[in-house]
Length: 495
Image 1 (cartoon, helix red, strand yellow):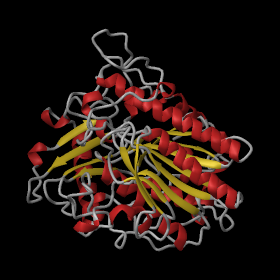
Image 2 (cartoon, rainbow, N blue to C red):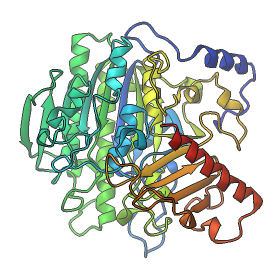
Image 3 (cartoon, rainbow, N blue to C red):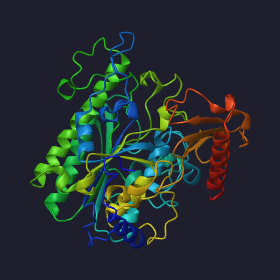
């Protein structure tokens, strides 16, 4: 429920019923209710690293490294939108991006671990899946589309993959960025592909700071759309490589992009935070530039969705989390990510509010389409994704949900399996409802190791320090264990 508007007049109830019966709002062709749509993905950022989430440990303790994040522009997004308190993603990069692009969980797409472009043979199949831009085109939405930054869903042509133009072969009209992580923030290969999608139009070595280049690339593409026809809407996914480390760690960003001072002898934590603040600065400049381009403020023409692809790496995870609970696990430090939807597509009465519904990265697929005036059901797509637009609209039944229920979905799910294409080989799976979370482990043959089940109460134990099943569970806790196990089984059998 939206915590700041619980006393909204119940006359909105009838509006909500009509909205649910009629489905997503349908705008004129090329003029969806979200108008321009910008999805911004930050790499390796959990809720502990975004100031407006308030989940970082202050630095009053001299034994704790300097861990205060500085994210004023991301925080400003929350003042113009809805902050989702309980958003999940995948434990690592590629599965999260596959969820976003397909609206389907990894056990369906076959992507459960990081894709190695040069060595792997399994990629996100552009033939088997309906990627976001393909859905926009199939619906005749009129949206122009591009992906800027890190893709991380394709493999080399030599291994039977889509190659360097994987994004455009997956439907994007334009791509400029990287296939995977950069080895050096200041020396990296930049690729661009147009809608022909067969060979890169450019592949060149850049010696400019990667975050700055990606922000500029996004603006240049947006500017080109405006120059062609400012009345036509656009859809852009901006996947920053930052603040993921490169092979040397976190090199110091340009001094004008952060406020952490001299980083020569700084800790990894401080360098990580400076890299995140550099992203924040570049994003702020991009949003100002979009506003100037359209002669106003960015939120008057554009819906921005900001999300972390997965949680924070263990080496820089906030000390409130137990060691070993960071990226690459099924714990909250790895899967609890920031999600803010702001701007044009958010009802003005809801801007600056917090949403408690449990939601998932996978939901951004249907959300983006709904903001573009496209209905998933009308396209006949089978997805796990649920549109978050009801959470952005004043006339929503979500307003009247009691704290122990969930209108969007009764459960959300995440997983990891280290052999892409083989979701039943040693997977780790997790599922949660509004209060409890179950983690399950399996052996190499996909056999459940039930004695290793872990159950957590995320209300009383948000950092997962006490596995309930190692003690004496109450009847309520046992019932939730059973319910979550059944819900996971039902989901997995639905494939």
